Length: 90
Image (cartoon, rainbow, N blue to C red):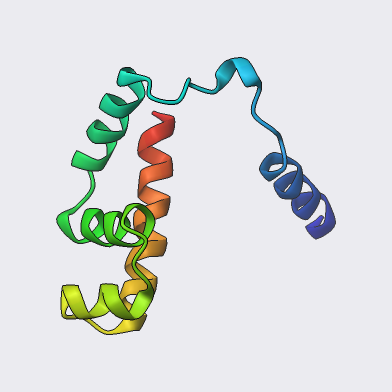
């Protein structure tokens, strides 16, 4: 049973996107969609996601800017990415 679940999970993650599904770089609709999803995140999640993934700051720098512990940055980033993925798929 565990092996079947593991295989199904691995297969779902490794499914490559169809090229027709990918938006063109610079697509204004894509930018609007991303802004919409980001606006639905909590302020804490949005801040950590923007600083780490868009601004490219490391964990320590992000923690200093947000005045939180590095472990808090890690956990918030993990939850923020999960929330973003869920909101994006809706």
